[in-house]
Each structure stands twice: as structure tokens, then as C-alpha cells.
Length: 310
Image (tube, rainbow, N blue to C red; front, top):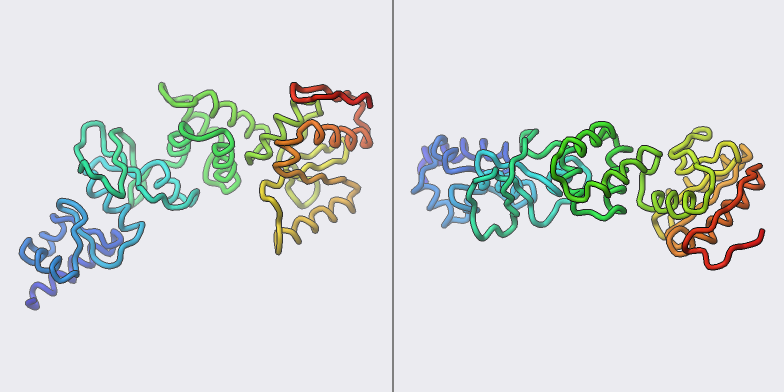
């Protein structure tokens, strides 16, 4: 390869480096790496052809494939769904990369590692992807209530979203899948619910059995807790993992001991107690509330097989 070609390749490489190693034919031509040079580079293994007019330099990576999807998708291409969530730090990188390409764009029939979607979205960022509130409503149309509340909870507690903006995004759409499900979840999140198990506890244990409403994400001292019955001196924590170990377990004990010193009782419930045995869990919580001064009555839910006299 001549020195002129090497200089052109170095210029093209500098351009590709800004896009995870992805280079279009137009960018290559502008740098001086013309068709005959590209063909030789491909034979030598120094350049990879990803699709018509789209090439890659250097090792394969998810970011490189994401950039390639946008280049292959055309001028209106925008990453969406799980790919956009990944770029915002809210999920793992998907194997197949969803790319919105506009309402009329054409794209390769054999999409392979990309999922091209006919539809319009507005991109943001140097690697164009949908805005986080828009993305969450997009993916929420295909999620269970448990998965959706977990996503919204992570995004909210991590400071990625505003609940008001997310509600406005949902309300502003004329057609949206699972609108009622998402509206119900957002209502629960407004009441302080930030995880799937906490939502199951609030609806299946607390509300279903007529227990007094707890403050969601309350602060009895220096720690934030899931459910805080301030008036009755009771904390309910919902632990979605089967168990905690190491630092997490130590932190839980420190929190519980701190609250015990304040005269506050803490109950920790997992999926078994909340989902499999909600009525038994409700009776236990009612007992703790009664010891704290609650004078209300526990109510049976449709799952209660036997109603205890006391």
C-alpha cells in the first residue's frame, strides 16, 4: 500500500474512531480510501464490510454494532427500546439491536443482529437514541406489571426520569399498548412503590386486607425504607432477592439495629411471604400494628381460606 493510501487510511480511521470503528463509504471516499483500496483492505482483513456502504475497522463490539445499525438504517435511524435503555444505563445490552428507521425506509431483509422498525422517533445524543421517558413508554407496552414497575423504580431512584414527564408521555400518546397497565403502575409509583415485590405487597397484602396505608419510601431517621407506618412504629422491607450476603446483609442488619434503637420494629418479607402467603403475612403485620396502637380490623381478601377470630 502506498504512503498516500496509508495516510488516507489513517484519516479514515480517525473518523471511524469517533463512531466505535464504523465507517461509511461516503466517509471513506472523503478521506481518500476509495473502492479499490477498500476491496484490498477487506481481503487483507483490515476492513470488514457490515452492509452495503457500511464498514468497520478494529475489533467487534456492541457499540460498533449499534453505530452500524444507525448507519445501515439511514438518515432517520434512531436506536430504541432496549438499545436506548442500555445507552442510558438502565439495562444490559440486547443481542439484537432495535433501530427505528422512519415510516417508509427500506433496509436489508436479512437484518441479522439488528431489528429494524418502521416508525418515526426523534434521536438525541451523538449516537442517536430515543429520549428516556419515550423509551420507557415504548418498552412498557410489552412488559409485565412487575417488569415495568421495576424499570420505572430503577429509573426514578437513579435520577434518570421525572414521574410527571413520564405520565405526560403516556397521556400524550393517542395509541399505546397496555395503557391501563402502565397507568396503574405509575399510580402505585406515585404512592412510593419502586419495585415489583413492593407493589405486590402494597396491593396483595396491605390494600387487600384493609391495613392502614404506609408511607412509601419513608425516612425514619437516616435510612430510606420501603413501607413506613410512622404512627404505629413499624417498618416493612420487601427483599426481592432470595437472600442477601456480604456487604448487603451487613447493611440490612445495621439498618434494622439502628431502627430498633429508635423503638421501631422491622419486618422483612420476600416473594414467598408476599406472593405465596399474603394472608398470613397480613395477619402478622396486623398484629405488629395492633401492638403499636392500631385499632382497625383486618379484612378478608378473596384468597383468605379461613378468617381468624382474633
